[in-house]
Amino acid sequence: ARMSPAQAAAKAEAPAVDRALLAPYLAAEGLAENGSVPVYLNAEGEATGSHELRHIAWRLLEDVGVAIAAFNTPKALHCLAPNQQMETFLVLEHARRDPRVRALVWTSSGTRAFNSGAALKGDQNVYVPAEVVDAYRERGMAPVGDVVLSAQTKAFWDFPKPLVMAVNGLAVGGGANIALANFGDVIFCSRNARFMWPFAKLGLSPELGSSMMIPFLIGMSKAKELMLGGDWLTADEAARLGLVSAICEPEDLLPLAVAFAAKVAQNHPETTRCIKQVMNAPLRAQLEEVLQREQKFIMETIRATGGLGGFPKTSKL
Image (cartoon, rainbow, N blue to C red; front, side):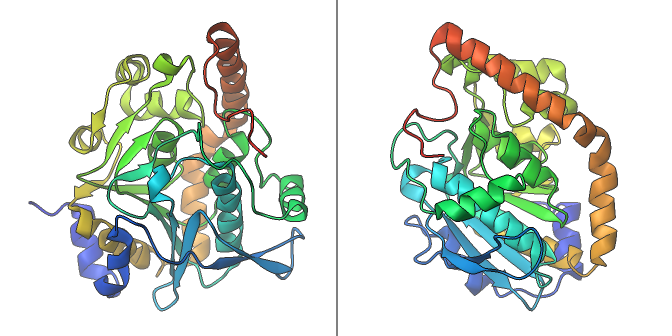
């Protein structure tokens, strides 16, 4: 297969990364250990403790300035369980504060799924201590109980360091939006990747900022086709539409993403922050209103249809 410009640039200029370190991410059973991240009860200052992760795996490749966050519940297809949602905030907050992290790669373990969207069954508990959840919520870094995941959406948009999405498998609903709707700055995907927005079938409407971002990225007609029709979008079609920068074989995905992140990490952090901020700014200025409107309409369709919504009623968030 022809190497894309992004692949060629990553290979030519990035610091070397040992592929053997990345091979365990391909295991169908997921990573054996998740690791832990520091927690910060205060808006500024040092960590006040640590949290042993249950739903996300955290690794730091300090020699190249890259961290890897991986959804790591493959049996549940990495769905948006309440604890996963809260741990996402913990990971983003630590990655922002740790100066050793100059770029972040976000992926999932295995090769079947990236994120299957709303957790409509399974464990609804949150294992992050309540005092940590409360402290993070005070500064907008915890779920606020809405269906459209407004706080999580803004946390990804506002993450100040380069974030590379490595989409390794299916991504559905909110998972498709995390993969494609500007949660990451550069998106690579495996040939196993495929995307679906099943909102119409479920009695829902677009969320996580997708009502703005997907039409912006691919045009209104194609966006409405995907949202109303609920059909699968292949990796090849996503690349043709410009939703992803490159597609590759499953075993090459994480090496490509880490190599590109390592190359970007060589730049001055203020430069990369400013590039992100100035490019996001016109759309970020609209995001609050977009999320409020999405919440209004998704509640209207839930009331009309009894739609499933983003959280089961038993969610502990």
